[in-house]
Image 1 (tube, helix red, strand yellow):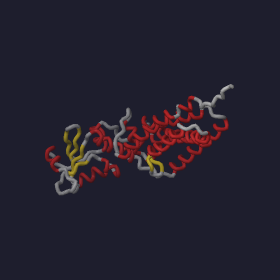
Image 2 (cartoon, one colour; image 1 turned 120 degrees about the vertical axis):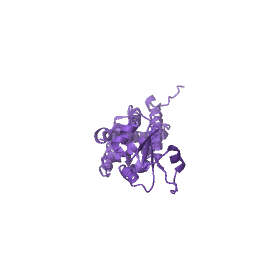
Image 3 (tube, helix red, strand yellow; image 1 turned 180 degrees about the vertical axis):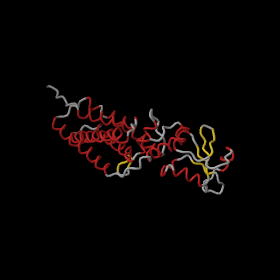
Image 4 (cartoon, one colour; image 1 turned 45 degrees about the vertical axis):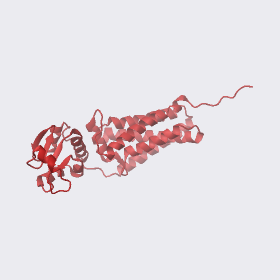
Length: 264
Protein backbone atom coordinates (compact mmCIF):
# COMPACT_ATOMS: atom_id res chain seq x y z
CA UNK A 1 0.00 0.00 0.00
CA UNK A 2 1.37 3.37 -0.97
CA UNK A 3 2.16 5.62 1.94
CA UNK A 4 0.54 9.01 1.91
CA UNK A 5 2.96 11.88 2.09
CA UNK A 6 2.23 14.71 4.49
CA UNK A 7 2.31 18.12 2.99
CA UNK A 8 5.36 19.91 4.25
CA UNK A 9 5.72 23.60 4.84
CA UNK A 10 8.34 25.41 2.76
CA UNK A 11 11.77 25.52 4.38
CA UNK A 12 11.62 29.33 4.36
CA UNK A 13 8.57 29.38 6.60
CA UNK A 14 10.16 26.89 8.98
CA UNK A 15 13.05 29.35 9.31
CA UNK A 16 10.77 32.26 10.22
CA UNK A 17 11.64 31.81 13.88
CA UNK A 18 15.18 33.05 13.19
CA UNK A 19 14.37 36.70 12.30
CA UNK A 20 11.68 36.60 15.00
CA UNK A 21 14.26 35.66 17.62
CA UNK A 22 16.80 38.18 16.32
CA UNK A 23 14.23 40.97 16.23
CA UNK A 24 13.05 40.10 19.73
CA UNK A 25 16.60 40.20 21.10
CA UNK A 26 17.35 43.59 19.51
CA UNK A 27 14.03 45.09 20.62
CA UNK A 28 14.52 43.80 24.17
CA UNK A 29 18.01 45.32 24.21
CA UNK A 30 16.69 48.72 23.09
CA UNK A 31 13.86 48.51 25.62
CA UNK A 32 16.33 47.92 28.46
CA UNK A 33 18.33 50.94 27.31
CA UNK A 34 15.16 53.03 27.29
CA UNK A 35 14.16 51.81 30.74
CA UNK A 36 17.49 52.70 32.33
CA UNK A 37 18.25 55.78 30.18
CA UNK A 38 21.45 54.12 29.00
CA UNK A 39 23.42 54.89 25.86
CA UNK A 40 23.29 52.43 22.99
CA UNK A 41 26.42 50.52 22.05
CA UNK A 42 26.54 50.91 18.28
CA UNK A 43 28.82 52.23 15.56
CA UNK A 44 27.02 55.59 15.39
CA UNK A 45 26.07 55.95 19.06
CA UNK A 46 25.06 59.58 18.73
CA UNK A 47 22.59 58.87 15.94
CA UNK A 48 21.11 56.08 18.06
CA UNK A 49 20.53 58.47 20.95
CA UNK A 50 18.96 61.09 18.68
CA UNK A 51 16.56 58.55 17.16
CA UNK A 52 15.58 56.97 20.48
CA UNK A 53 15.15 60.36 22.15
CA UNK A 54 13.01 61.85 19.39
CA UNK A 55 9.23 62.21 19.56
CA UNK A 56 9.05 59.25 17.17
CA UNK A 57 10.70 56.90 19.64
CA UNK A 58 7.27 56.24 21.14
CA UNK A 59 3.84 55.23 19.87
CA UNK A 60 1.08 56.78 21.97
CA UNK A 61 3.53 56.99 24.85
CA UNK A 62 4.75 53.39 24.49
CA UNK A 63 8.41 52.87 23.51
CA UNK A 64 8.74 51.56 19.96
CA UNK A 65 11.09 48.93 21.36
CA UNK A 66 8.27 47.59 23.56
CA UNK A 67 6.03 47.26 20.51
CA UNK A 68 8.87 45.41 18.80
CA UNK A 69 9.22 42.99 21.70
CA UNK A 70 5.51 42.11 21.56
CA UNK A 71 5.50 41.86 17.75
CA UNK A 72 8.51 39.56 17.48
CA UNK A 73 7.41 37.44 20.45
CA UNK A 74 4.04 36.86 18.77
CA UNK A 75 5.75 36.06 15.46
CA UNK A 76 8.09 33.61 17.18
CA UNK A 77 5.16 31.82 18.80
CA UNK A 78 3.18 31.62 15.58
CA UNK A 79 6.18 30.47 13.54
CA UNK A 80 6.51 27.36 15.69
CA UNK A 81 2.99 26.12 14.90
CA UNK A 82 1.64 24.28 11.87
CA UNK A 83 -2.10 24.96 11.89
CA UNK A 84 -3.56 26.70 8.85
CA UNK A 85 -5.22 29.57 10.70
CA UNK A 86 -2.07 30.37 12.67
CA UNK A 87 -0.07 30.43 9.47
CA UNK A 88 -2.53 32.94 8.03
CA UNK A 89 -2.28 35.08 11.16
CA UNK A 90 1.52 34.97 10.88
CA UNK A 91 1.31 36.14 7.26
CA UNK A 92 -0.87 39.12 8.20
CA UNK A 93 1.30 39.93 11.23
CA UNK A 94 4.54 39.73 9.25
CA UNK A 95 3.14 41.94 6.50
CA UNK A 96 1.93 44.52 9.02
CA UNK A 97 5.37 44.47 10.65
CA UNK A 98 7.04 45.12 7.30
CA UNK A 99 4.67 48.03 6.68
CA UNK A 100 5.53 49.51 10.06
CA UNK A 101 9.24 49.01 9.41
CA UNK A 102 8.94 51.05 6.20
CA UNK A 103 7.50 53.93 8.22
CA UNK A 104 10.26 53.74 10.85
CA UNK A 105 13.02 53.70 8.23
CA UNK A 106 11.40 56.64 6.45
CA UNK A 107 11.19 58.64 9.68
CA UNK A 108 14.89 58.14 10.40
CA UNK A 109 15.98 59.11 6.91
CA UNK A 110 13.54 61.89 6.03
CA UNK A 111 12.35 63.38 9.33
CA UNK A 112 14.82 62.72 12.16
CA UNK A 113 17.86 62.86 9.83
CA UNK A 114 19.68 60.28 11.93
CA UNK A 115 19.92 56.53 11.43
CA UNK A 116 20.21 54.08 14.32
CA UNK A 117 21.95 50.82 13.28
CA UNK A 118 20.30 48.85 16.09
CA UNK A 119 16.89 50.10 14.99
CA UNK A 120 17.67 49.27 11.37
CA UNK A 121 18.68 45.75 12.41
CA UNK A 122 15.28 45.23 14.05
CA UNK A 123 13.55 46.60 10.96
CA UNK A 124 15.63 44.32 8.74
CA UNK A 125 14.46 41.40 10.89
CA UNK A 126 10.86 42.44 10.22
CA UNK A 127 11.52 42.54 6.46
CA UNK A 128 13.23 39.14 6.58
CA UNK A 129 10.32 37.68 8.52
CA UNK A 130 7.82 38.92 5.94
CA UNK A 131 9.92 37.54 3.09
CA UNK A 132 10.27 34.08 4.62
CA UNK A 133 6.61 33.83 5.55
CA UNK A 134 5.15 35.16 2.31
CA UNK A 135 7.61 33.90 -0.31
CA UNK A 136 5.65 30.76 -1.21
CA UNK A 137 2.17 31.95 -0.24
CA UNK A 138 -0.70 31.93 -2.78
CA UNK A 139 -1.46 35.13 -4.69
CA UNK A 140 -4.64 35.70 -2.68
CA UNK A 141 -2.59 35.65 0.50
CA UNK A 142 -0.26 38.25 -0.98
CA UNK A 143 -3.20 40.56 -1.58
CA UNK A 144 -4.35 40.24 2.03
CA UNK A 145 -0.80 40.77 3.24
CA UNK A 146 -0.43 43.87 1.09
CA UNK A 147 -3.60 45.33 2.57
CA UNK A 148 -2.29 44.61 6.08
CA UNK A 149 1.04 46.29 5.31
CA UNK A 150 -0.62 49.40 3.88
CA UNK A 151 -3.04 49.64 6.80
CA UNK A 152 -0.23 49.30 9.35
CA UNK A 153 1.81 51.99 7.62
CA UNK A 154 -1.22 54.26 7.35
CA UNK A 155 -2.21 53.86 11.00
CA UNK A 156 1.34 54.57 12.18
CA UNK A 157 1.57 57.61 9.92
CA UNK A 158 -1.72 58.98 11.26
CA UNK A 159 -0.57 58.43 14.85
CA UNK A 160 2.73 60.20 14.22
CA UNK A 161 1.07 63.09 12.40
CA UNK A 162 -0.96 63.67 15.56
CA UNK A 163 2.06 63.29 17.85
CA UNK A 164 3.23 66.62 19.29
CA UNK A 165 6.79 67.06 18.11
CA UNK A 166 9.45 68.11 20.56
CA UNK A 167 11.43 71.30 20.10
CA UNK A 168 14.22 70.90 17.57
CA UNK A 169 16.90 70.79 20.24
CA UNK A 170 15.12 68.39 22.57
CA UNK A 171 16.38 65.20 20.94
CA UNK A 172 19.89 66.65 20.81
CA UNK A 173 20.03 67.68 24.48
CA UNK A 174 18.63 64.31 25.53
CA UNK A 175 21.28 62.53 23.49
CA UNK A 176 24.00 64.80 24.87
CA UNK A 177 22.87 64.27 28.47
CA UNK A 178 22.91 60.50 28.01
CA UNK A 179 26.32 60.69 26.36
CA UNK A 180 27.75 62.76 29.22
CA UNK A 181 26.57 60.14 31.70
CA UNK A 182 27.85 57.24 29.59
CA UNK A 183 31.24 58.88 28.99
CA UNK A 184 31.94 59.28 32.71
CA UNK A 185 31.57 63.06 32.84
CA UNK A 186 30.30 64.50 36.13
CA UNK A 187 28.57 67.76 37.03
CA UNK A 188 29.20 68.81 40.64
CA UNK A 189 26.78 71.37 42.04
CA UNK A 190 24.58 72.54 44.89
CA UNK A 191 20.81 72.76 45.10
CA UNK A 192 20.91 76.49 45.89
CA UNK A 193 23.37 77.40 43.12
CA UNK A 194 21.80 79.71 40.47
CA UNK A 195 24.47 78.86 37.88
CA UNK A 196 23.71 75.17 38.36
CA UNK A 197 20.06 75.87 37.62
CA UNK A 198 21.08 77.81 34.52
CA UNK A 199 23.25 74.90 33.41
CA UNK A 200 20.41 72.42 33.85
CA UNK A 201 17.99 74.77 32.09
CA UNK A 202 20.00 74.35 28.88
CA UNK A 203 18.89 70.72 28.84
CA UNK A 204 15.22 71.27 29.64
CA UNK A 205 13.47 68.00 30.59
CA UNK A 206 16.68 66.11 29.79
CA UNK A 207 18.36 67.69 32.83
CA UNK A 208 17.21 64.70 34.88
CA UNK A 209 19.56 62.54 32.77
CA UNK A 210 22.66 64.58 33.61
CA UNK A 211 25.37 62.89 35.73
CA UNK A 212 24.78 65.34 38.59
CA UNK A 213 26.44 65.11 42.01
CA UNK A 214 25.01 67.18 44.88
CA UNK A 215 27.77 68.64 47.04
CA UNK A 216 25.91 70.52 49.78
CA UNK A 217 25.85 68.32 52.92
CA UNK A 218 22.45 69.71 53.89
CA UNK A 219 20.74 68.05 50.93
CA UNK A 220 19.31 64.57 51.51
CA UNK A 221 20.99 63.30 48.33
CA UNK A 222 24.34 64.89 49.12
CA UNK A 223 27.60 63.22 48.12
CA UNK A 224 29.66 65.73 50.07
CA UNK A 225 32.57 63.39 50.73
CA UNK A 226 32.98 62.70 47.03
CA UNK A 227 33.03 66.43 46.31
CA UNK A 228 35.55 67.05 49.11
CA UNK A 229 37.90 64.35 47.85
CA UNK A 230 37.77 65.80 44.33
CA UNK A 231 38.54 69.27 45.70
CA UNK A 232 35.39 70.95 44.36
CA UNK A 233 35.46 74.67 45.22
CA UNK A 234 32.98 76.25 42.78
CA UNK A 235 29.57 75.34 41.43
CA UNK A 236 29.00 74.03 38.93
CA UNK A 237 32.23 72.16 38.26
CA UNK A 238 32.45 69.65 35.43
CA UNK A 239 34.80 66.71 35.32
CA UNK A 240 35.93 65.25 32.00
CA UNK A 241 38.36 62.34 32.02
CA UNK A 242 39.75 63.41 35.39
CA UNK A 243 40.05 67.11 34.47
CA UNK A 244 37.99 69.65 36.43
CA UNK A 245 36.43 72.64 34.65
CA UNK A 246 34.72 75.29 36.76
CA UNK A 247 31.64 77.23 35.68
CA UNK A 248 28.56 76.64 33.54
CA UNK A 249 29.41 75.50 30.02
CA UNK A 250 27.57 75.93 26.74
CA UNK A 251 26.17 72.92 24.90
CA UNK A 252 28.89 73.38 22.29
CA UNK A 253 31.62 73.26 24.93
CA UNK A 254 30.10 70.26 26.69
CA UNK A 255 29.88 68.45 23.37
CA UNK A 256 33.47 69.33 22.45
CA UNK A 257 34.96 68.25 25.78
CA UNK A 258 33.02 64.98 25.90
CA UNK A 259 33.49 64.03 22.24
CA UNK A 260 29.90 64.53 21.09
CA UNK A 261 28.83 66.12 17.77
CA UNK A 262 28.10 69.88 18.02
CA UNK A 263 24.50 71.13 18.16
CA UNK A 264 22.72 71.26 14.79
